[in-house]
Structures are given as structure tokens and as C-alpha cells.
Length: 196
Image (cartoon, rainbow, N blue to C red; front, top):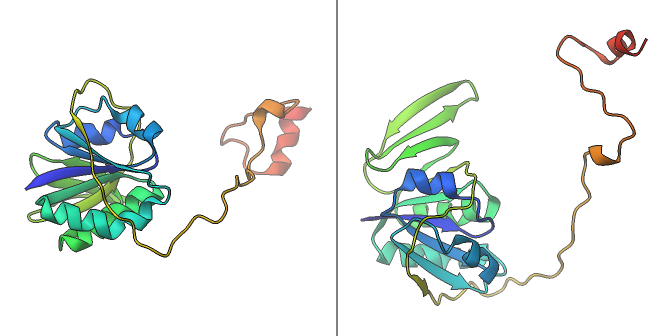
């Protein structure tokens, strides 16, 4: 049995890899730039699926591969494509999907998760499991060999258009004046007391 970490959109997985342990394997599904950012990840091995313009189209192939590889733990950072790939692989393994995970202890096979945004519970897992975790930092300090993995994406999906979405927030760098207030200002009308 083995632990696999899936990365497909962001190299910011350092804290996730720390929870997975150095015996974990890293599956990079994406472009060469993502692979280059993750080459020094402290893992046992790195497998690279090149040219994954739409990572989710590889969900079935990745699930089949991880089942053949004897995976029992599938971890991913909490990003949309990683979440999709990890959930698909977990389902293929007949595993338990842990949502809202905060931590993972690979040695003890325990997860801590948030429940209703007000409580934490610790779960002991036997058998296959998959979860997403918040993660940050680009990993460093490893020297794992990188191997290319030839997988076939599901046919019938092509990228038609890609465009940036406008931001819903104001750019503070463009503001003439930025005012910060604390919780003592209960409502907009109370701002008058600090402007007079």
C-alpha cells in the first residue's frame, strides 16, 4: 500500500507533503513549469503526466493507475482540479472521502476535520482514504527521480476559450486613501465619528 499526493494546478504543496511523509509519491498532472517547481519535493518518487491542459480529463486514467499501484492514501491540496482527481481516485479505490480536512497523520492514519465550522473531530482510518488539505509553500530538499507516465485523457473534452475573470474586489494600490477600522465601528453610520 502507498501514499500518493496529486498536484495539477499549483506547486504550493509543501505543508501537504510534510503531512504525507517522505515515503509518499508525487503525481504531477500538468505542464512542465509545474513539474519544474516540484522537482525538489521531498518524496520517494515523482511521476509526471505531461501535457495535461485539462487535468480533470485524466481522472479515470489516474484512478486506474493508482489502483494498479496499490495506493491506499490519496492526498491533494484544496484546489479544484486536485480535488476532482483525488475524489475520483478515492472512489475507484473504494475509499473513504474526508471533506473539510485540517490535518493528516500518515503514520497513525488519522485525520482531523472541521465539522459545521464549529468543532473538530479526529478520525482513525483503516483502508483506502482520500482527502484534500490546505497547503502552502513550494517544497524543497528532495532528490527524487522524475519519471514520465503516459496516460490517455478521456476523449470528448477540449478547451474552447480561456480568459481572465475580472476581480470583484477593489485594488488597494489604486486607492487615494485607505482607512482601516476595528470591530468598534458597528455600522457605516458610525464612521462619522472617526472622520470628524
